[in-house]
Length: 363
Image 1 (tube, rainbow, N blue to C red):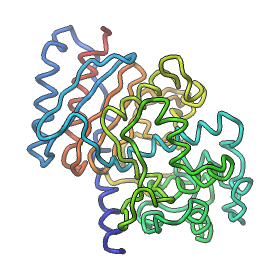
Image 2: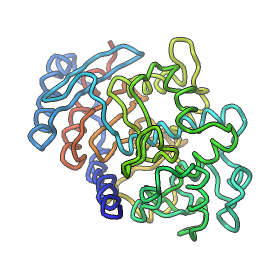
Image 3: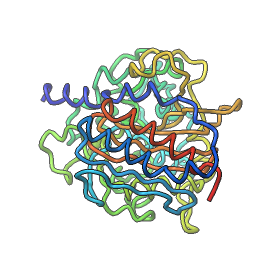
Image 4: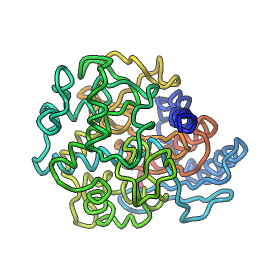
C-alpha cells in the first residue's frame, strides 16, 4: 500500500513543470488572421503532446456557453472518462462554497465550530485557509490524505489529520497539496448530514448534466467506487471533457447555467480572489518557484488585478488534464488527456496562448 501511495504521490506532483509557463503573459490579439490558422496552431501543439507520450488529447474552447473549438487528436474517444488529479480541487471548492452560500458554513469561522476534534492552534483554522492551502497542515510531500483508507468517513479522515502537529500557524504560510481539503469536506458533511458524493451529485453534477463524473480515492486500494466514503478531495474526480466543460460554463457564467443558479456570483468571485499574496511559499511545485503566481480557492491565480481579483485561473492536474478560465476575454477551456503533465504542459500553454490570441477580440 505504501508503495502504491508513493507512486500516486509522485504522480500528483508531476505537474510541477507546467507551472513554469503558467504565468507567461498572453499576447495582445492581432488581426483576424490569427483566427484563420488557430486550428492549425492548436493541432500542431496537440500533435507535439502526442509525441511526448500522450495517447490522445481533447481540446475544447467555449465562450458564453457556445463552443468555439473542439479537437480530438490521437487515440481518445469523444466521451473518454478519466481521472483528473488536482483538477478536482476546483470542484471541491465549488461544493464547499455552495454550503457557504446557504450560511451553514463560514469561510472565516474557526474549524472547531464544525469539527470539535480540532483543538489548540489548529482549532482556529478556517475554511478559507483550508481551500487556499494555508492551513498549516503540511504539503503533498507528507501524503497524509493519499495514504488514508478509502473506507474511512470524511469525519474520521479529518480526525486523523487533527491529531498531527501543524507545520505552520494557520493562515501564515502556503504549502501546496496538504490534506486540508479532506477537513473542508468533513465540515461540509457535518453541517449537511449528507455524504460528499451524494451532495456533489445533488448540487452540482445533476443540475449541470454531469452524468459521467464521480469521486474516488487515489489510489483506490482495491475498494470499489460505491464503498469509497473517503474520496480524495484534492485529486479524486473521474470525469469526461464534456462534463468538466459544463462545470466551467457554470463558473464562467458567474454561478448559473440556463437560468438555474448553482453558486452565487459572490461565491464565484471569492473563489477567484488571490489568497496568498504576501504569504511565504514554503512548499511549491518546483516549476512555481520564482514565478509570479498565487493561489485562490481551489485554483491557481495566474494573473490578477491590484485588488487581487484573478483574471486568468486554472487547475491543472498531474495526470494531464488542464482546465482554465480567462475572465479578461470571456474564454474558457480544457485540455483533456492522461499523460504526465510535465510532458504535455508546455504544448497546452502554447495552444492556450494561440486560442486567446485568436478569439480575444470577440465573435
